[in-house]
Length: 275
Image (tube, rainbow, N blue to C red; front, side):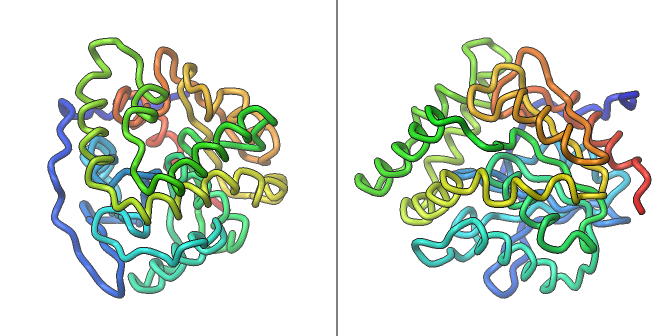
């Protein structure tokens, strides 16, 4: 059963104060077992604002800027998804965290999947929000074409993601404008590096889900054209303790457009017993 929703405040994503060390920038709130949140390409840790507010009452919530995003140092050009996974474990070491609950959105979901595949003993629970899994030929060609265009033009694509990630309904407008702000502050070179890793990484760790013994949540919006409900269901079916949650009437930025439903699903997941 889904827990009683943890209410999220009216959407506000002001800059959060950051701690910094060894090229990492992150924000912490709350106390207790550590929950690490990793956002997607072109965003910042503020994209998790409703989850930080809603989940920090019972957890030490740690939202981190991805490499080259927000105030974290970038990785070198050309690094693949595996380098982002290694970056995540360096972050845990900097914070002296041996085990954590881990949730990632979009590119962050790929990092989360790679982390639990690489060092499952360090991940108590894993949640993939709007994660991709083995794109079909058409989707793969489209995302690779976008990666190539970003590299060729050396600019951050803003209008394309907004069109894919949001509907035209009134409830999406605040989230759309907040996301526009995140994308407009993004460094183009770091964006290109992360987007290439995202475009090529959907199958990098896909074979490992049958081996993942941690409680695994796969959540997406029913209208997400790229991180589809079918992808979430496929991963959930493969993971021994996998659960798929599909949020109706929402697209890619479901953590901002449906924060109460997302927080409730995450709260359920955080109550799952671990080995």
